[in-house]
Amino acid sequence: MSDIIQLLPDSVANQIAAGEVIQRPASAVKELLENAIDAGSSFIKLIIKDAGRTLIQVIDNGCGMSETDARLSFERHATSKIRKAEDLFSIRTMGFRGEALASIASVAHVELKTKRTTDELGTCIEIEGSEIKKQEMCLCTDGTSFSVKNLFFNIPARRNFLKSNTIETRHIIDEFQRIALANPQIAFSMHHNGMEVFHLNSGNLRQRIIALFGSNYNERLVPIGEETSIININGFVSKPEFAKKTRGEQFLFVNQRFIKDAYLNHAIVRAFEQMLPAGSYPSYFLYIDIDTKKIDVNIHPTKTEIKFEDEKSIYAIMCSAVKRSLGQYSISPTLDFEREKNFDLPLSYKNTTPVQPSININPNYNPFDKKEEKSYSPFQKVESENSKANKNEWQKLYSGLERQDESVLPPNEETQQKLVGSDWEKEDDKLTYQLHNRYILSHIKSGIMLIDQQNAHERILYERYLHSLVQNQGSSQQELFPQAIQFSPGDFELIKELTPDICALGFDIHEFGKNTYVIHGIPTDIIDGNATEILEGIIEQYKQNASDIKIDKRENLARSMARQTGIKSGKVLQIKEMNSLINELFACTMPHSSPTGKPTLWIMTLEELAKRFEK
Ligand code: ADP
Ligand code: MG
Image 1: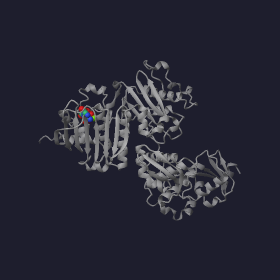
Image 2: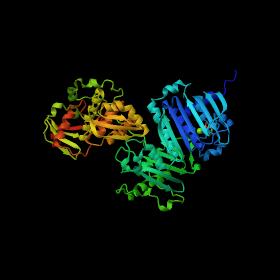
Image 3: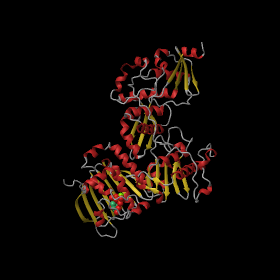
Image 4: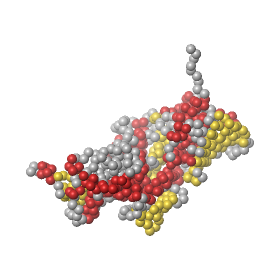
């Protein structure tokens, strides 16, 4: 028998590598931007068309390439950044594997124009799916321009796997933001479909954060600075009161490389302990500078994970640095430093060989491992008799919103299920009591009933909003002074996508230039609160729901609105308000639980009461 092993042709090997390195347009953006940074550019321009499907172009004013280098740059394992194996341990550049350009060229139409300052003429190369179509001298400016067209033209499966333009653009913006944050000294711009999305001048980190996220970030930032013999930490964290409902704005960089590190994230969040409202996440922009010999960046193909030699010390230093800065800015006068001495490093720690602080850390802790909320739909099988009575034609409105993966309500005690509407006698001035500003106590025919005001009101609003969405008839009250809100580009894309539904709820909003919307009116149901804050809150909540659970768009919006605008625990209610809340609750299709499946009410029957008192 003849031998059967063959070497794969380069084009195939490159496509295989591309599968790992270039998963979506955003990965190509990342590689091209990183190359431009490694080339020492001071200005980098990113141009995108159709979320990167049609065009991704990166133009830089960096060192450029010679004719031979330009040709070689597309070869696999062709890199100017490492020469020998030991170099791997002292990498300061972004790239080093020499496979990005080879991979991109194997799955797209690529045009390269490049020129060094010392050369008269530049080089122009065109490649389609690893095949060189053209190479010639050309007139061009100093630096390099890469155009990547028709990404995945030869891999339909990959192309089909891409998500909506909104999502792919969001990924591109994420990469762009990370790179822009890591390099505030470099000027950047980004254009999408002919519109300038970002224009970032060279500046310091604070200026960069503001240019990316809006001028209101200026007052939100607390600077962090810590120098030790192992690492230096710089950057900013947000003041606790500006914590977000989503983890989006958490940026950690090691030697100017964006990384994800659950362990260090835990250290940072821990420093905020007890200062954050439940379910909120601090924003941070933190930069670790560390000797390259003490890390291994080579463990992940897309390099967003890093292995530290001395993880525990870094954890402790990070936590104490953040904590100290928060303390210094006297954000939390109640912060009890005494209790957690372990985290306060002695002053002598600085610039000396550190003693490993003793801390108890659960190595299995994974902050991303959040218990999923039970999803819930108005079609749940568990129904009370009351809800059946109330249902009539109403349910029909939800066809189309029905979901397959329904989970049932948390098990109700038998008595809870037995409640019927007639048990609650509708009377507007009936005696009801508010307990601890959060529960409503009332007597019903068969016993007593306790209602959680927040869960109950969320249920009422959720059904009302869902109704408005389906019927497209939310009513609006006009604002006296229309308010303009500027969103981050990512949120702006999201609002654009949601605008028809947001308007169906009763908002009257219009796009108003770059990343900005103007609110002319808000739903009539919203009694108090600032229009801007409400809309921002809804978007934050929407993003959080979308990342936590699989959920229909409208259902998510209705839930987010209900959560944002509902009565909260702690609000004092008048008797009339309580009675009307109960009346409205029992007019709901599913009065027994909040939209996220939390119970709204609890009943104790007369028999149970008698038993308790041993009657
Ligand atoms: P790596 O960045 O890992 O070295 P790439 O495939 O991304 O591998 O790039 C290959 C080589 O092409 C680089 O090492 C660099 O020498 C050259 N190169 C790529 N992009 C540029 C650019 N924008 N300006 C100058 N040289 C570049
Ligand atoms: Mg590279």
